[in-house]
Length: 522
Image 1 (cartoon, one colour):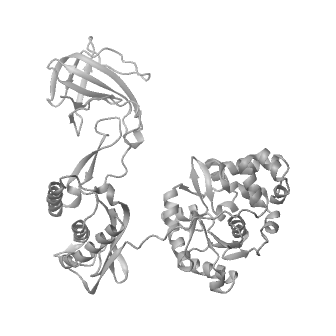
Image 2 (cartoon, helix red, strand yellow):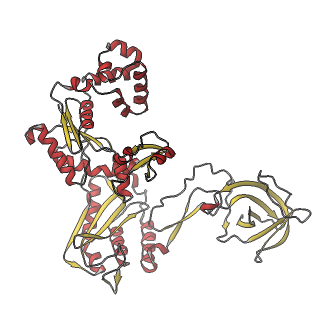
Image 3 (cartoon, helix red, strand yellow):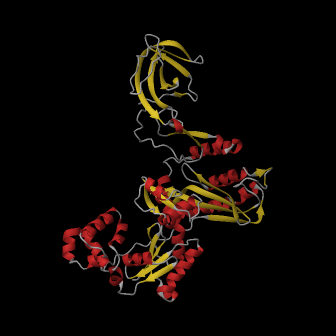
């Protein structure tokens, strides 16, 4: 079996630049833990290299675009490349974002060089400009052949020629195996081995005894004897659904009525694959251009009725008198709609969303009622509270529009140093009123930079007529924190629990600007 490998260099940088809407010709690098993980050609021309610290890279290239590492983004952006190659030859294996393998389709396209040329042309037409192809007897040799090819070109290693091709390559090509590969390369260099041919000439038993099973496997690769197979993926099913309108419709009510059958078909075809959608992207097209697009999330999963409602909400904001009129703002509907499309962005197994023993009719009625209220007062006007991580009671609350999944929440399971232990207060003040806390001598109680209380709280009061002066019968604290003031934090502060003479308990905050009442207990 001959293997064809398609390599798109620096794919993490390409995907990140596309997401940031920056030019691919800009010098850029993807950073992980302030270390350059991947850099592109313009950055390398300025002296930027993998493994450099952030400051070193910026000193060599001040205009360097720094981008965060995101493996999910890289894999998602590489999906169209896999689809293009699958159209030419089924059985594609995604080795990692930017690198794929497939059985060489030489006989179908004439010669293996013709097959490589066809693959390059198809990817260039798909806006992938830097593509290189290698064909050989085994996966490792084909990958190295692709890495030696020029831009939009290919290298074909003759049958039985893997060992001869690999002999002159430096051992540094083994670094792509990750930390274990880099460690092996360092050891081989200390042993005086500079090329793969030097490693291939060593006795097999000696290599296995000195370098272990991994070293023996690498020696077999260097000799062109590694016939390891790759797992070809099954192309994902086409799960999106669309409905065209001829002639185009400019009435939201007419569009909503017309998409009902398509929404039911969309949900049914997901059910055939035992899937449900919890995230759906709805696109509206006008004159062949997507004029309105939004991703909707559902706390459980979408039904056909839910999808119809989302279409109505999405288009309703762009209506005047029930008709779609021209708008001046980007992203709004500008003309009558000629196509509505449903694309599943998040799908989950249907078994994970099975109904309870007695069904869920009551929940459906509640959700339907809330959805009708949203239709009257606006989607973002009806919200539900969600618990998230944080130190203060107010910071642990987040309001999410009803029907949307809570995203970008702070994790609850983190330690959160300085957080007051349970039980949680029952009343949290949206605007904490000003308070005063004094000691026996009537001096204001403070907290030093080291977290030491200057005096024992004896009396306190809350401004605005909330609480008059009253003695403190019990207190606990302080719980000091030093939250970032530049991001909305209170700076060096501390929280206290105080119990007044009336038996009620309160949570007070001592911040640099003074005391305030944050919450109350039952």
